[in-house]
Image 1 (cartoon, rainbow, N blue to C red):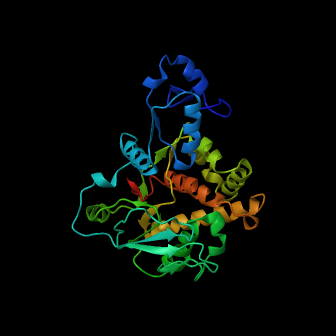
Image 2: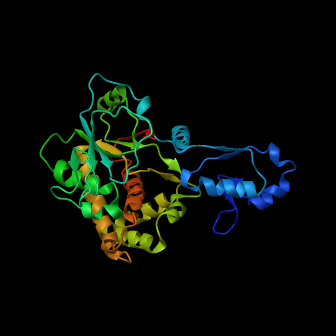
Image 3: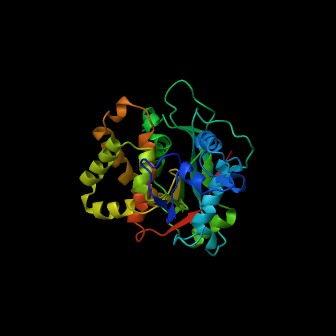
Length: 325
């Protein structure tokens, strides 16, 4: 890093050094192999800083490679059950996964076979620029006009109000994924889910140092975070001691990706959206006066909180999250 300001002195029990300090310890910088494994949007700045410090033996890890590496690391020894380790039965789960698509999505470089159970839904469809999707989140009961803050969660809201509340088998599975990210499940995995009566499938958690409370500062301003805590305290005061403990650990279920039984997904939505509505009310400026995706980022933290709070209530397993490029 270039400065100690606002940075910890160690991560994962390893010392954190500035480039200046580390340069003093290097007798021959050409021998130092550097791996940059960060989101692509910050790589150029990192490489420029490394070059300025005299480091040139640099390997860049692409988003797809980083995602796969993090997923594999999460599978090992962190105490989260894997869908892949379950015994498979003969019948597949009946499922519908709604894939949030937006007019702002960049075209994919590669071609992929998208599972048939994934149903594209155009989120943020309110307005003149509709895309070629099967469903649109500005029909029925919806908050499509809030997409600038809610991101893919306007799609989940639409599913909650217009699909999950319809009469039908409560044990069927429904879910949400994104245009570029979805759970990596084979036909055998779908049989595993049904044979083991799984309630929820979530992505393997990613780890953030030193904890997810610190991580949220990258995406959520202090005043907005205070609004979230105020909403949780008002609506679920009995949960707050456990919530504070969860925020002090390092595991986060990213991307607002989920697959769950119909009844479970309804229960989650009934908990989630009243909190987010309160956050909009308590935010400064209020949610209807801005469009900066902050609610979507909060959704990731709230998904983590909810299912960690209910880890003994629901039978939860985890799978890899594919990243499409």
